[in-house]
Image (cartoon, rainbow, N blue to C red; front, side, top):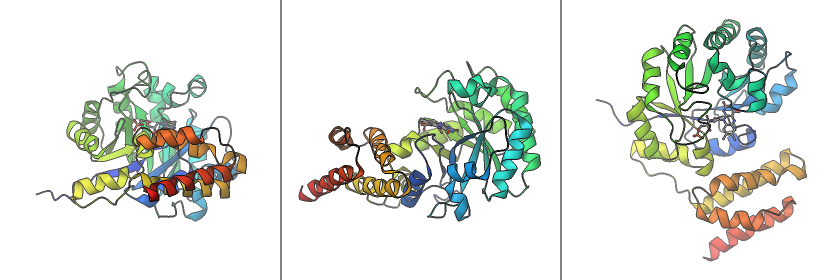
Length: 329
Ligand SMILES: Cc1cc2nc3c(=O)[nH]c(=O)nc-3n(C[C@H](O)[C@H](O)[C@H](O)COP(=O)(O)O)c2cc1C
């Protein structure tokens, strides 16, 4: 008999360029629920990148590759040259990355023009060569994972991609259940992941349109997957990871409402202020509010109040004012 504990899903915090940086990973993994994170993609085009680039994308490398709450952070590479990808993966591993993830899903035009990201979905044999070369070069105890979509213009080549990848000893694969053409538009085609599970000898992590604990349950039923990568949903609802686990174990979810979210925003502002130049500390807060608006109606009103603010001190006053308003209410 499967106990709720056994069927508890594994959750991974998704890579999101320009949004999920080390500070965001710190905040979200502190709330809990995530088994690992993946960095924003590091682009590999012509050289073996200097160490400082790896440290910039994954400052966690200086703390054993873990977030402050102890969650491993895999470094993600994006590129199309197998040798260069392997050399950079080996360097990341030597710097202490607990795992390497390979990006074959990025839809950005600039990346695709130089044959990177999702553009490679049209060349399954090249995807296989990159994965194989990286796997051969990175020490066996370091996991190598990949992230793909269902295809480029259509899902016609999906089975060919799966067949190409079935011969490589990847540790796991994340599949964003949409084509590049489908971008980020709903729906995500979770049923396709069942086919992937049948074709691949390693676990499939489901990704796409997972916004709530019930989405995870439905996706699990449709796809058969037990591991899920959360992207936009994790930003809209910062306690999503913890809420999913509470849903599966029948325990109470930790209280996390709008009040806790505003405290989180304040802590996020402080960390951005500590680590970045004052000019760059305020925008991440506004950016996060845009995601939070989807789940918390109050975030829309707060966004309107702070959208013209550029000074961190002024932003802090506005966020503190919000907290006082909430206490008075
Ligand atoms: C702003 C943004 C940045 C992203 N950056 C990356 C990235 O650096 N690497 C990657 O593999 N996927 C990236 N993605 C894709 C997400 O990891 C995820 O696959 C996608 O958003 C689908 O999941 P969702 O429907 O839960 O948002 C990005 C997505 C967004 C919206």
